[in-house]
Image (cartoon, rainbow, N blue to C red; front, side, top):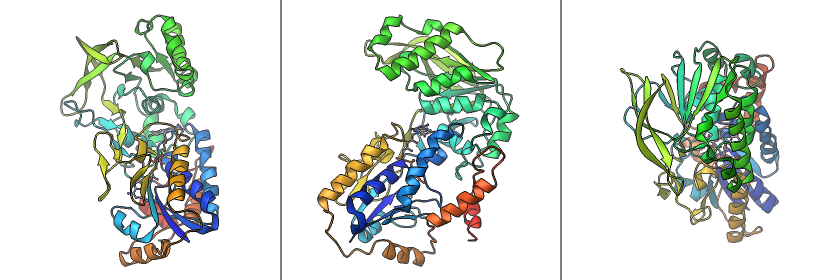
Length: 436
Ligand SMILES: Cc1cc2nc3c(=O)[nH]c(=O)nc-3n(C[C@H](O)[C@H](O)[C@H](O)COP(=O)(O)OP(=O)(O)OC[C@H]3O[C@@H](n4cnc5c(N)ncnc54)[C@H](O)[C@@H]3O)c2cc1C
């Protein structure tokens, strides 16, 4: 018998467990360990609450958790409740799938002013992440700005711009739904250092902007190079750029109250305000021959009392695990960190790619483990039994997948009409739902 620990129950963790389960069958036990009693990582806490169909992937993860040989051990924070070296004593291999939950800093003056928030915090707030439930973002002004030109930036801008009716069918938490409904924000400026051809936004997300009830996209036709420049783009990117060109050509829909303004060639220099964020000072850029943004010396200001920076994420270091400071992820070669220690998902690659991108990652690392410890081989490491005994000495009470089912049932029973669930937003409430 082999024992494997997968740390993190997001897509990276679940695809790895799925692959290990298939490869070893009854010859191994795979424990998926998570710091929370609720699984799925960013599928629960990141994916936008108005994009419910994407969360259906969790059904596949449930099948993995229900399969023989795979167990869920929740409410255990690795690095705090148990160290990596202790996990390696108990398991034949340890796979780190802890994601990249920390916001990258902008590195400009004024970014610590009240009103400037990282997208992980803002997204966590509307998605019921316990760390950010109390965030209370300043929604009292008429102008907000989002710094970044990826899908997460677009998620933040869209959530700020949608009507209550458009949001309440999803699983946005009530505290966010109520606060957004009464917010007077009318303009959300989306700032990108480069141009419309360099965005990292996908067609589905951009296409939605043409059909919003309360908001209209605003794109300046002067920002585009001649149309034949699009021919060199890969097809998905070309589709995205075509959508932006269409919005630019149509002009904003004046019947809509809210504007989502795309401000390209915009490099934030500093954030200013009297004790809180009031404006972003920006330098206009242009592209050089290699499509990098270079300053033009033209300076202007964008008013914003809420500024969300969405410029990337990093993995927190873990004691004893080699770390790539520049990449903000674990140092690894094809997912291998050290003997019997691996990483997958965002902790391996950095914060890029979709949910599905994590699948080949997980399968590749499982295949490496299989080569190094062929199915049929065994060891006398104790696995979950030993880990749970150790945790008991530290008064850590792990939860399992049945516990998650109970929480899930309570969340769906508490849901407002039309919504799939009302998430608990505090760890204590999860445990209370389990009578702990
Ligand atoms: C805001 C946002 C929106 C997104 N929207 C989409 C989308 O619409 N479509 C799409 O395809 N992709 C989307 N993505 C990307 C997708 O969510 C990621 O590709 C994917 O979640 C990465 O998986 P992961 O397993 O590496 O990390 P995560 O999903 O972050 O999972 C990490 C897990 O590790 C656990 N963990 C962390 N630290 C510890 C610890 N010390 N001990 C124990 N457990 C720990 C966490 O609780 C979590 O469960 C989005 C990402 C973000 C940030």
